[in-house]
Length: 79
Ligand SMILES: [Zn+2]
Image (cartoon, rainbow, N blue to C red; front, side, top):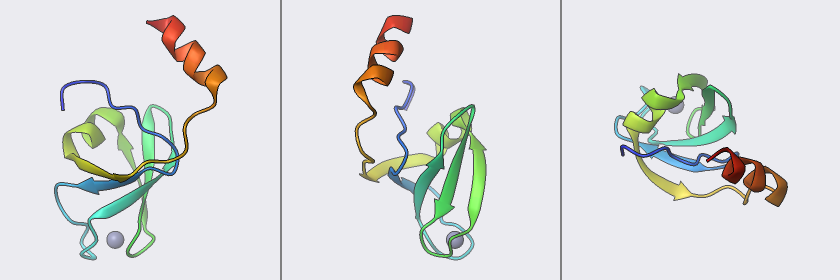
């Protein structure tokens, strides 16, 4: 994925490689320059740089709730 990925809190992600515990799916628990993920199998938490996560992302299993409209407006105005 070359484009910027719109991660949301609560997104459920499938990554290309499994966690050592065998789990493939991660929940987004923190957004920022680094993205916080929690393994849904063993509950282990990691922080990944956004660009690293974008490379490892295989698919969205489920999306978190829509961000509030005010945050969307601010994001659009930046473009
Ligand atoms: Zn795990």
